View 1 (tube, one colour):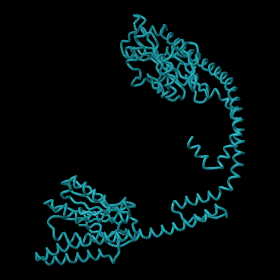
View 2 (cartoon, helix red, strand yellow):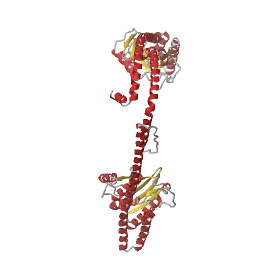
View 3 (cartoon, one colour):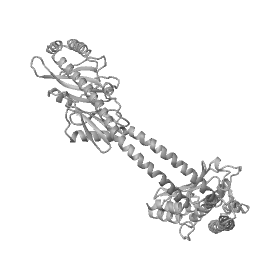
View 4 (cartoon, rainbow, N blue to C red):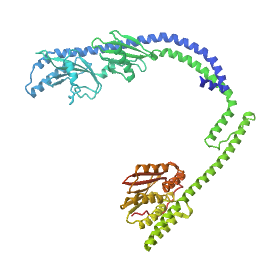
Length: 597
């Protein structure tokens, strides 16, 4: 009620519409209710009587079918030819085949008298199976030992639903309803097998296919209350009927059980003790009375539409400029300042529209100013991070060069100076912040050349560059800090010769740069600490300075979804992967080739 009150409290047009609608609809609703109540009482009773008659006819048809099956079972059991065959004792396999053929021929002859029967079979204790149909016997019988023993040793016929096909023969998957009864030896009077008579489920369903209304259904249940067959019923309907049949006494005369939303018409079949239950929804019984109610409602609906049309026409004139302003504000909220707001009134609403336009223009100017300041701040931060890392490179390289000069290895020192020259030439890149991936790879190769001169006995390296990644632009000085960490923290402590791999791969819309070594690796706690440091983008950190610097620069230029991922196992090595978008700063094509060592 609170929401409905709020809906009308804030709109005069809605309240006026409500008043006129109530004055018109209350008399129509009262008249419609009286007509519906009278017609519902009379028409529902007639429809229920008709449904009861239909279900009763279904019960008679099913009872006749069961009687035919019982008659055929008795006829087979008492047939002189079959009794004569049962007295025979086949001495060999040929005689057994003759016995089977004789029994099958007589079953076919007896079964021909009953159209409803799809097949009749004899299953003897000796394993012999005689059949009235031409279908081949299944390799694995569906007739279980428990069912066979139960039917053989009891006088009552056991009925079993087989929706996937016959238990005995391969009948192409046609569902059947099987009656299994005992067969006695004519000499001893003792059980010697079972008689199986099958009725196609399709024939049963034709008997049950009657119209009791939408969603209604007819069910066939066995003595225990389990559903043997139904027509397109869901599990909920089957559960309702099963609960009723098991929980209440059902007589042979058709009974009507009144439930909340439906009627259950049920009665037991005398021949089998089964129950036929028809589920009839009350909505179907009231269908005719609902037609009358619908006519009244249509009249009321047309009157309501006329009332709505007139009311909308009168209020649209006053509300139109306000709605224009609301749409204008919605677009501004999404950042669209290009929308126009037309001032069509000279009253208070028009003055409000002018003020709104002026305010929006002022907000737009402020947003442009803030955006420009943020862009300048972003590039200033990026420049500062890049400037921080250069002294770190220079310090380690000069330390290596000093060691060579001190050792008197002038040729190697010259080679290192040449590599250092190339290193700084690519690192400076004429002031460019984004360089081709190929140049970044050459840059790290220069660094590796320097380090290989100094640590030739402790590591080898391999550099690979995908052709598709050459012309993509990347921030410079990304790979060298990662390679330096791998050398000093992964390879040097290993105490053995290790290998370092630098791979730059083209992965569709992304670049993947990997620095991998087979050195000492990292224990889990150290790896966790490194991951925590990388996650604190922009914080002041003393640990893992080089990797954090690289990670922060990637976040600034590409966004938080890109960056560094570290995988490490103690004693096996460490893999550091850098993910970048290929479209960072656009792409260009350059020549050259990747080095492989």
